[in-house]
Length: 138
Image (cartoon, rainbow, N blue to C red):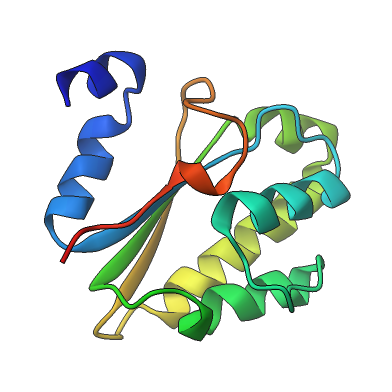
């Protein structure tokens, strides 16, 4: 996957997580400027279930009750391109960070963990779509 590493600086991190049996997902927020676009990007990019209500509580529920997702040893979510959203809607972005942080904390002592990483560089990979989610092979 040297080619992936050349195009996507996150590829080595994602590969390492998958090698450990974790499910990985990348969520690009490039172009997102408001809550509606953020929720839609989460729904499509993370493949959230149909019952996802496109609000903060529903996002929190999806991230703390992963019964809708395939089983995994752990989960790594890499969020890129978030800076534009943080500038356009700082209050909403703070709430998003709280939701991510609470979900990580929820899974902290569980056998199956969840980690969320905010990439500091420019958005990597496609902006949306379930193809951005990669599942580890068992």
